[in-house]
Length: 269
Image (cartoon, rainbow, N blue to C red; front, top):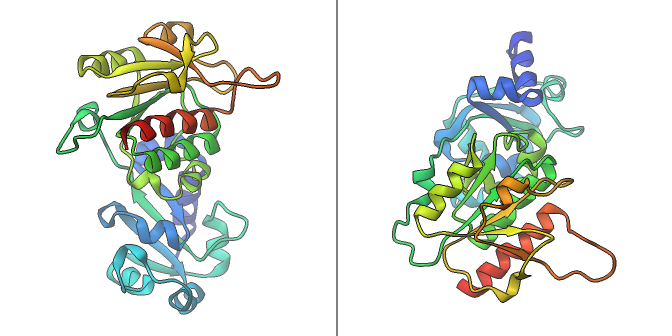
């Protein structure tokens, strides 16, 4: 039976980045996010009886062949909760009937920079102080689609494990390696040491983004309101810009990121 103490702890994981960081845990909800989660990340599953009775009629896990979601749940540490209890621990207005506590993954710059057997040029996104959870989640989702090798974020960037960010990634958080860094400058230096060319998306761009030939590449994307800090932008090998019509000066951070990522992908497909 779910205790008040458990409810309190799960709510803290949903609401406070400090609690998530100290515990090394985060929360996901819904059958899609559960079915795609790496098994070794799963700490505990909370599910309603109604969900178990209905889900197999509607959903077969894509990540587990013909294995049903209810079968997957039975193999793991899970607890049956009431609808009322699920409503208390859920971050959404309409809970889907399954909530999981997962272990946070851990990556290093070496992990991101490792070439492996991939012969394609590598692409990295370097994000400085992105604040909107939806923007960050969308960047992750787009990064997976464009084949990004890794995402590097400043410590002031919104928490990737924020429930709103998690939902926006649509599962890409499981498949796109990432790190937070206390020093964007140090991370850029490590990229350059691996012969990665660094481009800043900047209003003072010297050329348009589709006029550059991209090999191993990192794109610098700044805060939604203030853009890149001058010191950070100065670390780029060159500034690039996206063509604009009308009176616009800049695009949403996630939109601009998507344009740059897919131009790189087009050239390296």
